[in-house]
Image 1 (tube, rainbow, N blue to C red):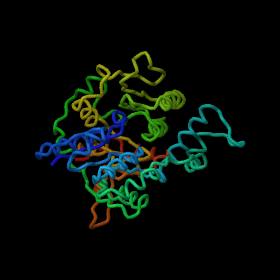
Image 2 (cartoon, rainbow, N blue to C red; image 1 turned 30 degrees about the vertical axis):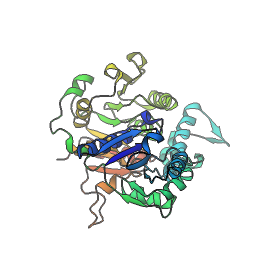
Image 3 (tube, helix red, strand yellow; image 1 turned 60 degrees about the vertical axis):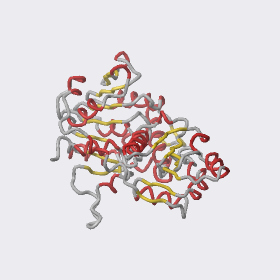
Length: 368
């Protein structure tokens, strides 16, 4: 059978979604099917099964084209719950930016002390949510099949497009099965760090990935804090990252970047350029995970978050966001227990004191 996956034009800006789509395509090829990832509607319409990828873009033109060609289509939406997280994500970003700029709003003076005492303050500064779900309502309703990667995503789909044909396929569940049991010391040689002495966060610098919360929660924690960031970062957020670390972070902070140089190092921030400006190799990335004392990723949203699966695979203590679908992958449904063991614990992404408490509790507590 021939499968076509219609990707958005900004496909190269993805991260985990790219990995999921490439894994799916390769898996189909391994089972003898023909798989094609394309943005060309004319090319795609001749295939047996057609899927539109990601509801972060308006697929109405693609739907209209397929209807005109009398072709059925499915959707792999990666449907984010913007009603849940987008307002908080912007409010947190805005609040920290306002502290650093010394801004006031209607007489209110932004301060880190207030944010630690009352984390909910960020909700007073949220903004209009993205309207992707509104744009793709008809796209989802008219699809012959919609594939959600978790029950959490399925619930979001049923809310945003009632009656859509959403089914759950846990397609990230086998992601770690191919990971080596014996990662190397490559990351230690690359950075000069020692095994178990550092906190790790992996992901592009962006408000949703929420590296600022990690910096603030660990501001007084005197161990190396390592960020592995891919090139397609948010430039404004990158500036905020540096300003936050320079203002509050006391311990060593390492940023591994594809586009910055050693000359960009400032204060506690040591920039290590990625080899040849490329994304770290699989060997290097797994080495980074297995030698970390803690994996922190208090993102504002993840479905489910591949970095969680990678760190948990090696028993690394992990702090995950409450707003993710990872719980679906680690749930004993018979007992209705969302945590099979305490390797991973969940926290609201804007609650800095709670993140700090988990950091102190879990650092260095590796699991079998």
